[in-house]
Image (cartoon, rainbow, N blue to C red; front, side, top):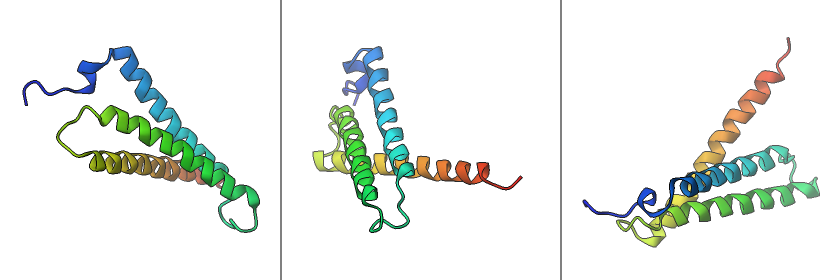
Amino acid sequence: MLFSKNASMEFPRSRLWRSRASILGLISASTATLLLCPCDCVRQNPHAILLIAISILIGGIAAVLIYREMRSISDITSFLKVVAAIAIVLAAVYAEFAVATYCIAWLARPR
């Protein structure tokens, strides 16, 4: 479509960057919360469930912000927009978590 609406036409550039920076910050906060979690033995530590719930809540807020940016896309249904937003957050948290654990293992190596 020649005149399709997208996020760059709808919002000023500063608002668009601020929105994307907040999404990145929320995804990073969700990953940081998971890194604090003693998830090896969830039943033995009462704080583990709370930290996982906080991480899911933060990730959910990031998914809502991604969904709000995707609202202007009229080619897909709302259900697929929700699924895509959740998938983006899950993939980003997984990627950050994998990189962070690799970096922690690299820093903890014997010298």
